[in-house]
Length: 181
Image (cartoon, rainbow, N blue to C red; front, side, top):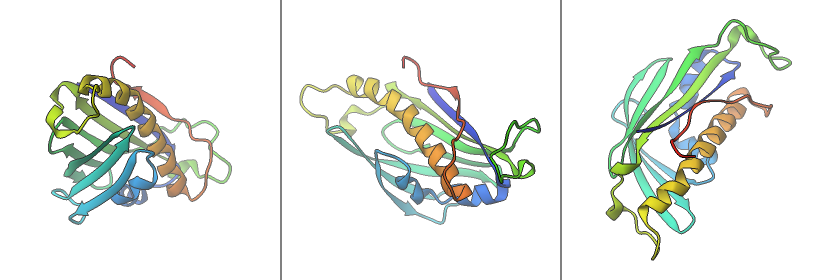
């Protein structure tokens, strides 16, 4: 199982961050390859999302489901077809030893957000994706792994911008990355 885990500090309390992160359809604005999100439910456990991705000559719609929420700490999800994948948004209190918070930001209100995703590339259903001639699913997976890490970092950084209401340099910590990238 490959894993991606990216985190950063946001200068807001966990409750505000949780309410923001549970609004999943906005993520299409953060990703270069996620083109559309259709929501089926209210964001609570059981809510499903159709995620329309497009990259290179490949277009594909994933179906995800919120499996659990622990307000304001965690939103768990899983992919429900074609690949074994799951993950979570985790909101934690930031460590007390924060160095140099951005000007105007209250370190007392800081939280750490984590985007965690695990996936088994070998579980991908090759028949689910219409690949161009001469392109194998293994080739596509090898190309997508580094893109997945780049996208995770992009999503976290852009979420911080919207959460805090302005752009700032965001220090991202990559805790785990897919194998072979």
